[in-house]
Length: 225
Image (tube, rainbow, N blue to C red):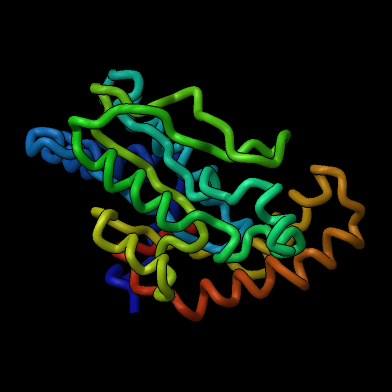
């Protein structure tokens, strides 16, 4: 069971309240201790994780009135390069747990938990289909990191090793059919035919999502759109 007794329904007012009444204080307390607060948002493909993460980052920065107080650090920035996937024969499984550098992601989050460390954060480009440097690095003003990804709560190694670098975790509980629909549409938006998009979901995204739903550790809070 998740730690939260009930889902928190997300809208602009709820996000603003969570930021002002909880998250901002946690980040300020962490920075006084010489570290940053790291929130991890998990959910299946197509659940809206990146949308939520972006809204939280914007809301925290607005509330703090400090640009870069919050920084987005997504798991997708640690996709293995396409050349590696091709070499391993994993191209058709891109997005499966083994197609990410999980240890590299953990190392980045652990490094930036210390307020003494600053530097770049990789993100995923849906235009280039590769990780690229973010335009918003971690700076001396950063007190809050928003980590986001499908496997942040996965109980299998090496993903389970993220547990001790995430200060708080949220599970974004999106209905299966809605997440499926959004994922298929995303494949169509990058040039796949509807048939190819359906096939990709059936062979890769669907199994990955079932794995995430059945083999995850409890989250501190369950949220839903």
